[in-house]
Amino acid sequence: MDEFKLKILDLLKEDARLSPSTIATMLGAEEEAVRAAVADMERDHVIVKYAAAVNWGKVDDEKVTALIEVECTPERGHGFENIAERIYLYPEVKSVYLMSGAYDLLVEIEGKNLKEVASFVSNKLSTIDSVISTKTFFILKKYKQDGIIFEEFEDDHRLPVTP
Amino acid sequence: MTTGCRSPRDAGELNCKGTMTMIKEEEIPSSAVARKPRSDMKSYLSAGARDIPPSGIRRFFDMVSESRDGDVISLGVGEPDFVTPWRFRDAAVHSLEQGRTQYTANAGLPELREAIADYLHGRFKLDYDPGHEVLVTIGGSEGIDLALRALVEPGDEVLIPVPTYVPYKPITSLIGGVPVEIETFAKDSFKLTEESLRAAITPKSKVLIFCYPSNPTGGIMTYEDMLPIAKVVQEHDLIVISDEIYAELTYSGRHVSFASLPGMRDRTILVSGFSKAFAMTGWRMGYACGHRELIGAMLKIHQYTVMCAPIMGQVAALEALKNGMDEMRRMVESYNQRRRLVVQGFRDIGLPCHEPQGAFYAFPSIAGTGLSSEEFAQRLLQEAKVAAVPGHVFGKGGEGFLRCSYATSVAQLTEALDRIGKFISKLR
Image (cartoon, rainbow over all chains, first blue to last red):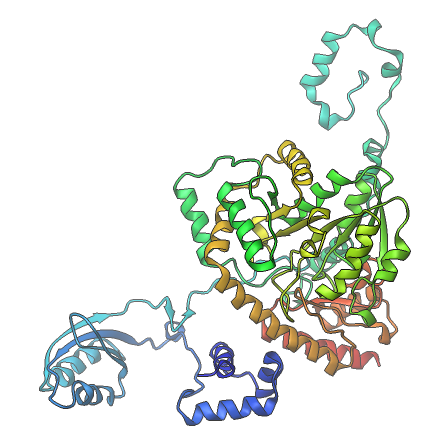
């Protein structure tokens, strides 16, 4: 990808609400060029959506998140694609990764409570034919996700006026 | 007190009594006995300390602090808004864990001096011998102080292009030098011109303090701009203290060091440091480079006054030079983006703003509002809750301008520009 687009992505990654004209000023470019590049990236699904990064730990109705290591048998001709799809189509599944190492898929799942997650694993995930075994790990606290630190700390310790 | 102890605080009980037992009353010279405690504490001060004015920035700082308004956005900050990259901090933490808490060589850790010499060679084509020509100082500030003390004798004239960083002038005065301001102008992008330099030179001129990229104007000097200056320096046998603390924060082309101009290496004391480029202000890590005779003299003063720079800072600085270039470039790129935003913002508001090509300050003109810098800054703080430093504190030529640091988040900058815009339209 060209450098111009990468720079736009860098800015949007920090603040998705920056307007094309602000981005254009910051990069010393034409607003039209920024609009076109963003449109390109939206069309190519490089920019998938402009979502808020939420610290769910702060929200009252807390959720339970678990990471599940899934071992499964790949299918001839499809590998893990079909199994992954069968898993990621469930709305409670937040992410699915194909992994190297001791297991095959890493599944992140979110539920209202422990029971809901447990029931998903036993009723839906484990019953898929090619799934051999699962190991479930509950997340106790998120410190940092996608490069965003969730802890609150005062970020500007500077004196208001300095030489 | 009658025995001639100079001040109650300095003397202390023990000292006074000691003096009395050692010298019999009749042996005390009459002049010492006759000396009465002075009524005014100020009269104990040296003329130098008494006469240098407090920094204009300090006064403004107090005003902002007193306002105690959480809603004030400050564009008055002369330091990066980045915290020192974790990698550098971690290196210092690790060194503390390892028990590295001792003095270092007076001139600084040999490996740091080597890294500085390598860096200056790689970035700016400068050649310094790390053994004798590189001195690690406590911030660039100490480097400036040492250089002036090593060079200036009472009565020597020190040429200072202004508006500029506040301390050059008072330090010069403190050691008996005579600061000579050379005004620079927005129409020249605040560059020092050959004509104005020539016009300021007298037989007493000895030192030129050169600070580009400039605080507060953001002006820079290119190779071509500096050539005629170097010619004058040679002609009049001047020594240059080149404060290049903002070197890496140059946004059009690469910074050219004054010391790299033909014939200028041995006539220049290069002063720089880690504060701005590597976001390490609080570490107080700087360095000075130059001819071994000059650096040797500075080293003597340095070893008698501070021994050496703190070791933990030196360790962090070494890490910055070894593994910090990517972090540094990332930060510089971010300043550059905000620079464009702010300059455009001021122009949109209708404040003329020359294009700053270095440092992280914009220096818009507020002369058109009819207010003085001081009035403008004061009212901007009170009525629009934006703090910025009035230009006149940076010397002649600063009146009519406002120093605005753009080392602040995009959200804050946008909000500040919005407030300044509303304030201006209210004035009109």
